[in-house]
Length: 213
Length: 172
Image (tube, rainbow over all chains, first blue to last red; front, side, top):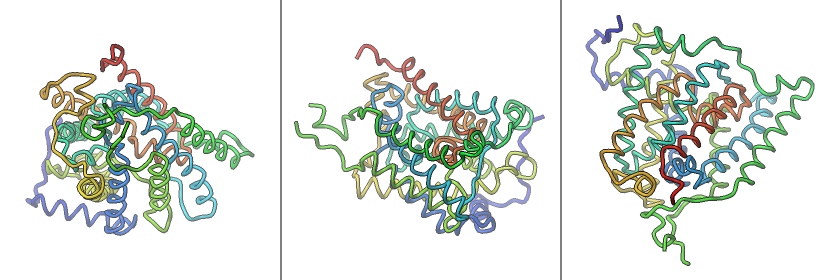
């Protein structure tokens, strides 16, 4: 029933990679160079801030390190206000994901638990692999297999499990007449949370040697 | 006490830069789409295992987003590598993080098998929810999306509960 169907056109791995690049060229969401550059800057910021470290992400799960939530909340707070006004000015569009409650809740539980154990997420994991963390490579191999299983059983298991979409609601929809104000308050509160979370850091015997003594 | 931490960005500088990158990416002058980092995983699985995209609903569904994130991923690997070698000088091969040694165990086998297992579950979870820390938390919450707030709340709670149950945090 779920046998794996391979391509029959006989194309090799490299041609499939070129096809990926061609798909980016054809879809009009920035040039290949720009998309690559966005990745370089993303990887650079994450690496330079050291938030891909096990001690930062699993450390937050243990409530012994708060750099990740402080940085993430600050970025969200600033961006939420800026993007709202960019959309109003016509220089950006909202790309909202649907509210699929079973999918969000079951997915969120699986994601949160595995993030605490791996100490990475799909955005920070590749940065850790690039800086030589072999354990994360094992996580990536598991992830690729997870992606394979999701693809193979999407129709039969995962799509039904996601449930029906309740629409693509955004916060201002709930505050009709006060749309701008609701976003401004949301952004300000998130920035305030970022500042107020006490700064905790879990030391790492390799990168914080003297700090341990 | 002399702290000789590795050269790194402060949390607020990191947050501001991440925000600027998201604003550039989502604007019509950039890519006119948000940052995401989990759709590339099933896409790459399709590329690696040579699956026929015509046969799988999901591969058809994610074709554009998966390819976009796949190219971004190449950039992330390059940017992470260059920064770790030349700026923070933190590149080194390692098998077990020091925090795992301190709060879990010293076993290489334990760390590698838990990593494999967690990676597997993580991608299933992210794809079920339709996003991850980047797509839902960073990009979604920044677009004040309700879906992102639900996901973010569930992830935060589960992350902290798992951290408490999985690691030996109480005795230290």
